[in-house]
Image 1 (cartoon, helix red, strand yellow):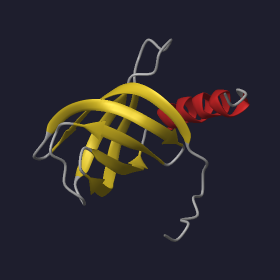
Image 2 (cartoon, helix red, strand yellow):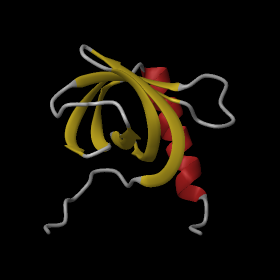
Image 3 (tube, one colour):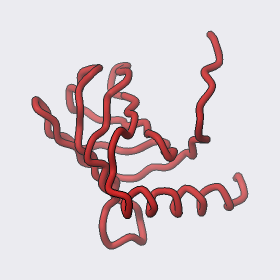
Image 4 (spheres, helix red, strand yellow):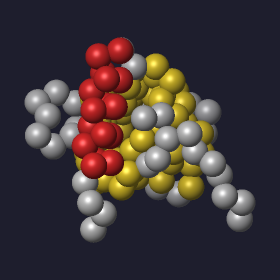
Length: 108
């Protein structure tokens, strides 16, 4: 297996997510997150190449982080990876701040 180089480090999480697309509405869990994407586990049938709107429900945040446009890059069983394609600037700033807090926490 080749090692894929990522632009941004990913951090393991377990947050509820909801998502909607042209042919799917679902919910699941974000298993990891970075500034440019996340890994989601869900029972919903999602297809590679689909575009989704995603809400990540981060604990201690009143409002979920909203990704207006995310592309499904791969699917494997109940798990799929999405690339964040568009977020409002304030949402992206919130994501960056949240990632920074994850990065500053000691690894367990």
